[in-house]
Image 1 (tube, rainbow, N blue to C red):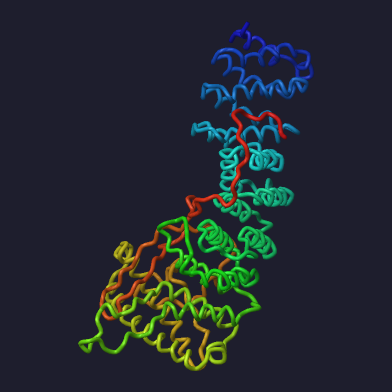
Image 2: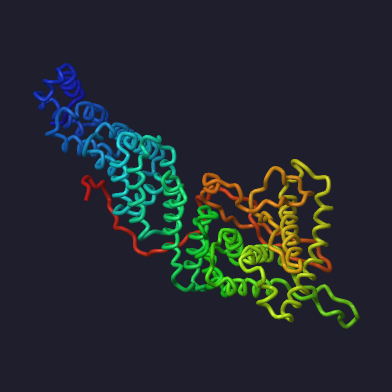
Length: 534
């Protein structure tokens, strides 16, 4: 016979009126409350509140009590589930915390938004009680749970971890997170990798120089830098790009990008034209060149500086055309004869060449023969002439525009185009010095604009990229968003050009660009809550 509302209240009264030291004598009354989970909706809601209230007084009924509450967490009535979930943290004491955390993590699979928020609140609550034990339950599901639970548990940590109180995030807790995350990284998808790196980057112990170096080592392992690149495999290419993006905020004058830069020069640049990407709208060549440019200032000592500079030099020649022949049939050049000046590509390549050139300043003098150097300077001169035309046209187009006028999409594109052309102009001037100079500094056109640079008519400041930035600034935003980029179409004419795609800025990248799994094979599924830790 099912327990009634009256029986629940009567037995609740017995327990509530009993002295604490006498509670254990009323085991039968507590059993009646446990049986309330077999009643109707009203009885279940009362049981969900009464069971946890006296839970600690009946250790011999602990398993039965937790299982009764879990029955309510799986009830068909969402209001009963929410009430039961709300009370779950009251069971989180001693060795039960890991179990409760494991159960709550499984409950993240709910599709009801209010219930999902209730689970999140409960997890945060028990995290503050015992962070390490709660993490034990979370990582148990990340490593063994079904896909949806694993995915949501990782997202929970990536969002909530940085909001936890400092006294909860002890060194022991941070070490535990690092150890468990390394286990998870042995078999991850691209999206999971990004979220796990975000988790690690908020750990205080990893924000030191040695900590950042440890993170770089983790990314190197994921990037498979010891293997040759297959440019025809879009997932392999995207894996490399995603790993590089995660490593970028970690590089500094003390944490070097040398292995990544070397790999790009050895394996990526030679295959630049054949790279494939699963993201259709992404200009994969420009993306690669931009990443290389951003890494190059943090490159340390290289074993093959001359070889790497030679590869960059060869790529520069590909994107810096010779002037067209002097005359056509009618004694004049036709528009179709004019080569396209790909400014965005050249900005990246010139910047990278300029950065690595500092390590071998005599490269253009001693390592390149006179004929090739002459050819290179002819290309530089032709490109510089085209630059001057566009710099003038862009300045005229932006003349007198300030404030909101500069915020239109068209003018935003022109402002960035002006930065691109100005940057190239500065770098070309350095290379025309005799001997070539590598002293000028520019801010890459897609990097965040400083307030002092907001007036488009001024030349970009000579701020070196990354200078003066702190670890905190480097990690914010943690993940660049790689959106489909806009195209600047410069005026047609003698120096008709294409300034390639570029990003208007960086922001949080929940969507990201990695849509394919790096590792096939996911953990097995489960239909109901697993009630015991494996």
